[in-house]
Length: 549
Image (cartoon, rainbow, N blue to C red; front, side):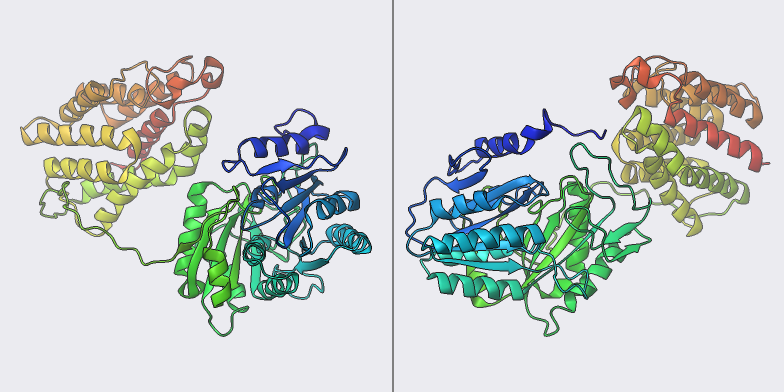
């Protein structure tokens, strides 16, 4: 059985609706009391003086559709079970209770269940003498040969346009016509790294690691094709090209960047950047998002929607609403950096050559770069999973400087100090600062004429002084301290490497940590897992022992 945060599956949708209503900052929505099993959310400030706009469908797409109920958007939302269309009775209850003399418009995503249930409810409402029109959203362009294109995230844009027209007091015919015009002008395409997690069901893991599925449906349906990449630039280029084909005249567009539920804010920000930098970006005048508007539970994916702009659409999109789930429109502007004074100036150095030192630097840096994935995986068990990336970033910077012949390889004091400065800039978190302290302090001692081993030990002492960690605290110091002690005692690199390995191995048996992220974990999480920083030190010394003669 898959994991899902809920009490009872049978109560999940009802409880979610209640939570959504409680958290609505406008306090303008209520559950319609129209009988058991009727899950309809309505505007509680509605007076039936204008055209009602109703939408809905299966739950699991939050904030759609309940989050779009409010002044300027939907009048009511009809909720089915997870990924299941609401009943005819529920849709009819919504129509009957919010429709006045001006009539109502049903905005339906193009799925069989929704078409049938909303369509039959519309017929029953007409038989009661009510004026009802229905529009079908068909914005998905991922499957070009599909005779019935699906309705996905672009539906939210149609809600906004139709809701604005209704709020302005336009007739049902005018609201319907503008909604249909918006549907024709809207195109969407999505992509996912994994399917969604349906409550009570096993997850479908058909998408292989490192791959992505183009056009995966918002219920987890298979898409148009599988891409052998998760690279942000490549993926956005693929999607942007398909959206551009919908805009052959190069018109200005509003772009909706929609999170399908499982992407982090960090990833969504990268996605937005890449999209606006793509050829599609030059036509984007307004941006909605990045935000979760039409989700697919926790699907790790996103969709891009474009609306070809007209003056009427611009006016509709810019109008304020009182719908808690809507994301306000933003105009797209070029970035304008603010000039600032550089306070961390790099010391002036004169590059020089030294083949032996170059080999040492090359070996250390390449070892850390190659260890990135291994150390990240190790750190994920006892920390925040970024040790490998942090060390690789610092090593990569020094390696680039080495290969560009910018390092003072024949001046050890300057070399250590320069490395210290660079690590403080490119390595994140506390690791960069601590390593910078060690190298900078060691460089100062070499400048004073002290031997390299003694200078490195002094640098480590300064690291401990400012960082607070000591041998036995389950950090990289457990490997660095014995290795440097061996060098200070005049022992060779083989002895130092053995000391580093012994120290690193010992961290796997330490049942508590007194420094770093591991200090937040319990004994069960730490036992048997080597500290990633100590592991990095061990691997570096092993590489030096093997390659440096």
